[in-house]
Length: 385
Image (cartoon, rainbow, N blue to C red; front, side, top):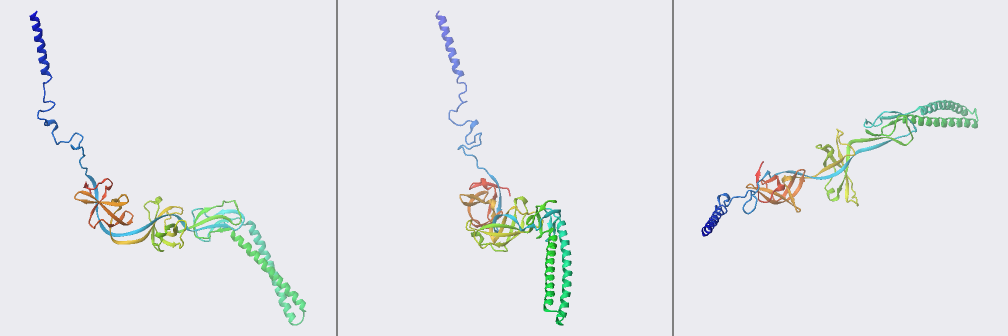
């Protein structure tokens, strides 16, 4: 019995010793006794996320384009908007009541002054005209006969062969025939004028923009039948703030552009400046003449007018795309040893994509022109061109 008890105790002790060895087989796998970093995680190296030990990302180098600040001439402009109008717009009216017989000019046709636009039926007027012509000839014959009688009576009266009463009767008959002739002549002229009015004519040189009658339709007197517009030159009336209007004078050059005809610029001139200020808007009406022989610029188009108000020579200029606007101030980035340095600048005139710099830069400074939106002061950059 004692032998079995001793045997069981020996077996239990053996199992306990074997379990303790298996639980402490690799004590260096978790940490070294000295606490130093193991080869798999050496000190000073970045983590797999690419960050430094402090958690900050490496400095980013941004690609940019640069330009050198230089001097050149710069124009100042006043930019306004307006609508194109014809120089003249003439409405043509019918002077008669008659049927339309023939259309001679359609919309879009170019016509000269007094050119026939349409023809009205002249049958009734021509008949009346012929009757008036015959009546005038009869009145002329009667007048000639009365004139002969008056000449004869004068001779007889001088010789005392007829009485005063007979002479006065002959003279009265002549005067009556003279009045009848004048009356018939006026009637004939009026009908002749009406006959001419059956041909509706243009009152101005220009383009037909409206035809308001049809063949077979009847028009009445004083009815509008056509509209003629003169496109040479075209007019743009703009309203200029009083503070800017004092800089203007007639003869100043202007340029006209429209979104409809992108890339095309039309020449113009300031021709009229209204001397009166509109009390409601505080503006002055200015008229600009524009010239376009191609007729691509048309009345009714919305356009932008740029009036040159002045010119500065030998001024520092930079591209407008290089300017950064922050809190009402203007900045640029100056290149200094492959770093972008932010600098405050003061601007003057602007012309299209260029701007004058009155303070903050010197001639020869190199500034960043493309890529300024994402730059920070002191950031490293890579100059592409």
